[in-house]
Amino acid sequence: MKPKLSVVIPVFNAAPYLRRCIDSLLAQSLRECQFIFVNDGSTDDSASILERYAAKEKRIRVIHQCNKGVSMARNAGLAAAEGEYIGFVDADDDIAPDLYERMHTAATQEDCDVVVSNFVSELDGHQVVTSYPFHSNMVIPEPCIRNEVLPFFMRSDSLNTACNKLYRKRIIEAYSIQFPERVALGEDGMFNILYFSRIRSMLYIDYTGYYYRETPGSATRNVAAKDYFMRAVEVYESDTPPCYRSKVSPSAIHRLKAVKLIHNVLSYVHIYLEPSANLSYWDKWRYVSRMIKHRRVRSALSVYEKEMKGRLGGYQRLLLFFIRTRSLLGIQLLTAYSRYRNKNNQARGWSHENHDVRA
Image 1 (tube, rainbow, N blue to C red):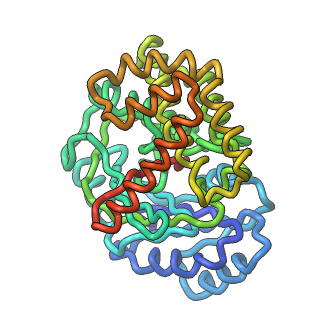
Image 2 (image 1 turned 30 degrees about the vertical axis):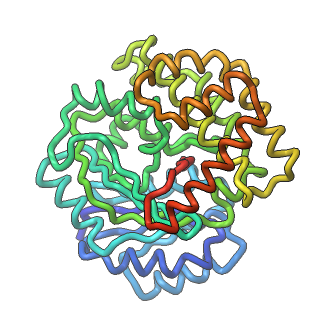
């Protein structure tokens, strides 16, 4: 029997979290699922864990390949997918039992090309829900996707992840959409821009059933290994796909890219200066100094401040002032105050700032 949806899970040295992820998939209330695990050259026990589960559960398929990266692993899963819709899960995350039943029901009832839901991030023991400013539980047609959703991808990273979405397989096949190879960061965002540029309908459900877990290799703990800022500059400088440029004007793309770059800089300032960041004191300041002096940041600042005029709080305006005047001391004092304030807010049960750098 053909599955209703296929879920692709790339796996690389995820043994400590893998069983929990698999169990959450097998517990789905929607039973007609195909789970495609792509073992991307793991050197831990991931392969044996996957094979033991596959021997007992016919819905699981395991693909083994040498280490090629998450994009190639996902593309291998896409090639093997049989369902009408396709979802993605990371091997160190888990999902609510009714996630795919809710999303698939929404997709089929409204005949939508994509369904988007919220997700929860667990950061330093605290949970933050990422939601979106789109109309919920109603079909978003192509004109609104062009005017609202596509620009959102250009100015923000928060919609980038592939893991809180269901995609219609025939659109992926019709336009040969794949995750980009040899891209260290941002592969989800590039995939989504290609996909959302081709669709005619979208549904956003204001429901949270995907649980993203911060691990030792994630952004806030791995800033020394991955140069997030330079990747953001590459995105800023890169050409957008023709299918996107046909729907959004060049001037709008320039403004949206400037907003996204400065949003990233504001986020990375906090990440680099976190006490838990695995960098020396001088390395932290070297990273921050390089960011605020970079010519692309200097040129994007004026565009950002014009676009965001009237929408920035006092803290953001002050941080931008210190960035514009290249005041490292001011940035240090202000971000230290922010951490102190957020710590007190968390102790009182209030929400805290979420500096999202997911792919």
